[in-house]
Length: 299
Image (cartoon, rainbow, N blue to C red):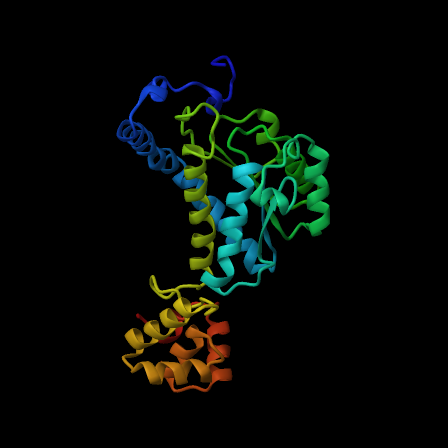
């Protein structure tokens, strides 16, 4: 098994006796291994920053971001995509996750679904990918046929393409993408179980990719989540607290201000700070490219 070129398939000598370990010892081994993940991601800092710039440009041009993966990689893409609307107030179409085997694979492994590249290409065709969009293939081992098929079709269509992997990539894969983010996390505690360190690294990179692009689009004011969508009581409370803190108003005032702003925290802030009506506030925000700091200054 050590002859496999995929580092994610190598045996980890530090966990070779883990089946004899106590629970405390298992935790210690796994925790020690996990400490290396942040460094692996940090090694790709410049590449991730470049990827954020590309995604920002795609969004500003009205394009969409697609994640494609199988198994854990696919689920992580879907997780990141699903969290964008409540966090940043985006349309669900803006960031989408595609997993080999379709929706059932989110909850139960669909064996063999990832083995055919033509299935990846077909999944892209179903979403109507265009040259305005960006496709990010997520493949910890760098070899998933479903992901390679999707990347190949995206490249043919003229879309921007990226790959996230945790083992060195073959030249064939690198040629398909504009950006290759390769965070080498090393052999897993359980050999080949890329839901562990590789999965953690992938989640960290996805966090940076969408959060970074959304910040650049003005979805935050400082570090405040001013474009969140109040879809539950927790987010409604957060919306009100943001207004109470930044506008120095009571909760009742915050609620009435939010109502006048049609539920938009960003619009409510501009209305309060400038004295403008809702429509005028929305226009000022649009003229500022979504960045309300340009309209009202610091939080």
